[in-house]
Length: 138
Image 1 (spheres, rainbow, N blue to C red):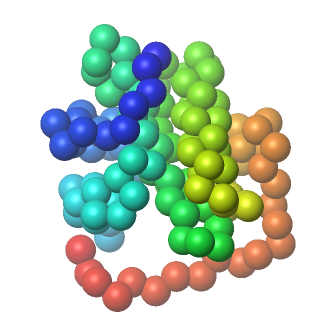
Image 2 (image 1 turned 90 degrees about the vertical axis):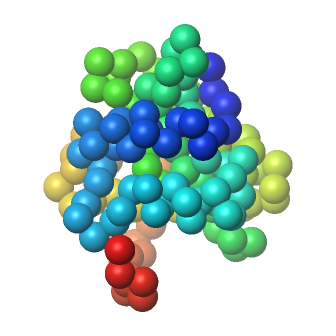
C-alpha cells in the first residue's frame, strides 16, 4: 500500500469505501465532509492505495492543542493487512511534525473491534466525555 494525501479525483472511491465500512451516518454528508476537509489541512487527509486505487483512508487534523483522527477506513477485503496501522502511524508522524502533543479520536459506542484496534496501537480511554452539537445541518 502506498500512502499519499487525498486527491479530489479520489472522492467517489473514498465515499464508497466509507459506505462499505459503515462509517457514514444520515446526518453527515460524506461529500460535504470531504469538501470541508479540503479547506483545512488537506495534507492530513490520507489515502492508502493499491495500484493507485484508494482502499483505505484517514482524516487527521491539528487545532493547535490536540490532534484528531477521523474516518479511518480500510476496505473489508484488505483488513488484517496492517494498512490501518500504517495510516495511523503516518498521521502520527505528520501531526508530531506540526508539534502536536496528543491525539484524540472517537469510537462509536459498541464498536468493540475499533476499540481493540486502537488499544493495540497504544490508545486508551482518557476519561473524557465526548459531546457535540450540530450547527450546520447536512
